[in-house]
Length: 237
Image (cartoon, rainbow, N blue to C red; front, side):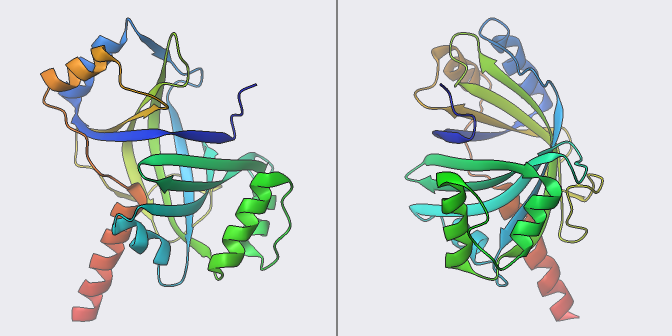
């Protein structure tokens, strides 16, 4: 049985224009179909140390990196289930473990000093992460609108398009509206190819025909870089 709380895959990212996106969508029609949820808003809160060690280390492009976030699909109410997610990357392979909790329980757990509050292997991994790094706290809220598609023959192969990516470093709650500073320029979206194997030939061809090349892109990383710019700007005044 497929475990929707455990993922092991490659995640390949591309920054594309609206014109390029239309070409990809046209090519996808014969091979892929929309996710059951259709277009959705995804909201995240990223946790980090007081000196932002986790994202600073990630931006150095190490062989191994990890992050902790809590995610909701749409704006959450306190009783709605959200996901506490531990995401790791080792030699280009992404490993994600997550556990579902009501929003109020997830935020209480992440805001406390106690560990041992989550059940199972995934809960133990998240507990250890929090114990190891200590002083973790919510640092950045990031939201975006996503359209997701999966292969008609292999639902583990997915393509997603994220637009209207916004961040803020205050009002850090999944129950608050999605707003903030925009990360991407106008008429641009972030495409991610998520696969446990190779890239299909049809997609390789459409990427080549449209001059689309993979890129290194971190939503939290971009937000952190903006935070650093604002910090330096204030210090210079």
